[in-house]
Length: 351
Ligand SMILES: *Cc1c(COP(=O)(O)O)cnc(C)c1O
Image 1 (cartoon, helix red, strand yellow):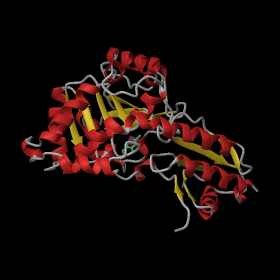
Image 2 (spheres, helix red, strand yellow; image 1 turned 120 degrees about the vertical axis):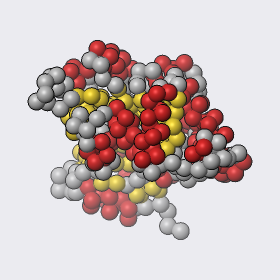
Image 3 (tube, helix red, strand yellow; image 1 turned 30 degrees about the horizontal axis):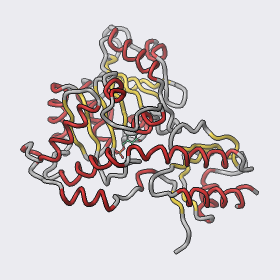
Image 4 (spheres, helix red, strand yellow; image 1 turned 90 degrees about the vertical axis):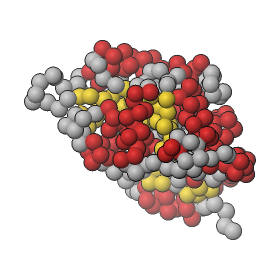
């Protein structure tokens, strides 16, 4: 087989033998009757991990985000988020379609903004305007190149949301990477996780990215919030049955895969340093986690870059006319990273 290293996404990770074992051994029941013991225990674990009362397992991060938006808003309301946000760019227009809400976009720094940025965009309490009723942050921000938020800035936004009586939702699909990047949080269930989780009224997390589960996202919040979310999940067609096979995989991911994310971050650093010096690359966004986004020099398009990389056995992803994204993940070994760096340096991409 031809040599290939696939950097298109960390969603490409496949379940390990150990994960498949955990899935095989999971006790199951009908989750619609709240009788799947593996799922009940896993939801409780996720709620406690982030310092909240309750949690709800869903098939995808899009669904958990869209449910949260639906519960927090009424039709005609407005949601504030960054222009890089996944909820705005990559969820099929779901905010409008599912919840009848409009969006106010902020122009932050790689997807991160300040309370000041939010405050100036809140509509006056006047019937001419849409009611601003929700703020969403994304940590890490995917389109922002895996950018990590500072806790200070999140605390400030939380404080502002309390003052203005607005809920704060976290699209934390990649919060695992953010926690690892901020330092001391390789072990789940440490205080840092619940302190972080309590900054938000609702949290969506994903297990199918760097954590390597085949599917799964969890929505976290108060008991009252999750009760409403449960109803919306049903309406969105997300009620499921013997899902212990999935939640067992996610639970295993939390125990085994979370501490390993650090490796992906180191690999991304390595890759970023090589890209930085390629003649065809104009600039590399700051590499903070496992996502590397870079800009191609004029005269070459992102599509052409991707095609040439493919000829060298390296799969990546055009992320704009002049921008390319590469993502490191568990199924790319240290050897493959080293080989990739070598191939990039000696290829036409450095010509
Ligand atoms: C992957 C991702 C999601 C959810 O995507 P699904 O494919 O629906 O699970 C949401 N937000 C961010 C930031 C993501 O990276």
